[in-house]
Image (cartoon, rainbow, N blue to C red; front, side, top):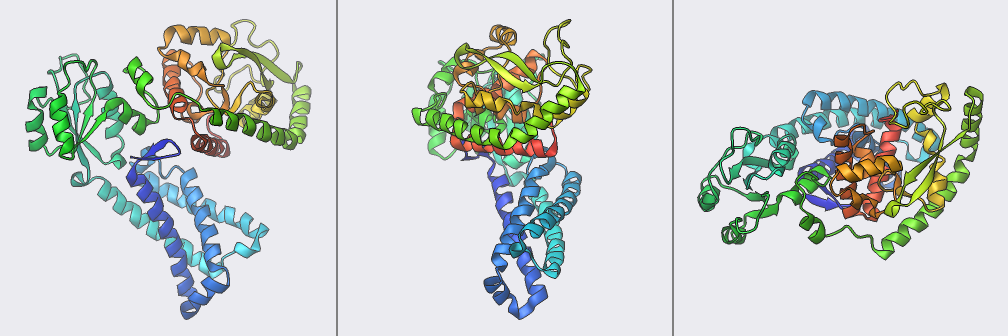
Length: 463
């Protein structure tokens, strides 16, 4: 796994991204040669050919990302990849019509573009087929072994096995034999700790994942140190789960891991950056959004009786309560009978205008004022109501750590996990929030905003 923006990416995915970027550019250059022959060099050098190819390649790669062609779920389905590649080509053509209309200087010749798109479609299809085949060759994967059978093992094993692009093949685990009621996700029991050396040699183990409930006096430290000097990768299961899943495992988390692991501390420089950026961006956004806000306010006023702005108490950093502002999307007094509760799909409490502004996330615009006055950041955990926070603090372990930073209008948890209705839903959301708090950085904020724009553009998750 390679760490970028404080997030881990599989080397195979990064290789796929880089290779497909190069493949698209080479396909467009080949199309230029087909059309211009011996004059290709002149066209590329003196007619802004390289710049035009770069713009077209960037648009195609953006569409590849927005159609989730680097997502593990899509990568596991050749049919889905083929369908989405066709959608990428179609969407890229539409986007380029708009781009070419506004900037003629980056427009590829019609003949070059048409031939290039054919080359791109064929080359990407063939390369993806080859990638699928190579991704499933056992010899190209690292053989991994679990030490111990802690509660994280079945969860981490399931996460690894559904993502072949990680290049990890699980062989089994060492430790006490599992009881009949224990679920080890189908992993083979290979023996006790005393058989570590034999199993590593016989099964050609490349990496060992340590996942034990209590490591004191039980972990075969001497054997692991010897294997590490021989080139076997030794890693903590919690760290690997964080890298693979992009979240922190609550159910198997040890308090000592939180204490001694890197992160969980925003530096003074980071705090200044987040506050200054919040003031600048929220001020600019509020000025730009004023005409839209006026139209939304008028539509709400004409559609249903009640105030335009919805105010609700939320909990911020350190448990401090503040007033959150949103455009009202529900009928006035809709929560009087049953009290506030999460919105559902086709919720009868929505007004006609409210249903649309929630779907487009336009009801969130007034939160820019919360960001401007310092209640929130652009990126951070989602703020909950005081009554919800009390329940979560009692029911969910390590939940208090979430209040160590200011909440955000968007966040790492929001882009990975939608609306939450149960305690289990919120436990998973906390896992993402803890990952963000542990790894907070400028790069992670930018990546979160980029993912948020993708969700907004595709209209996902709105209720």
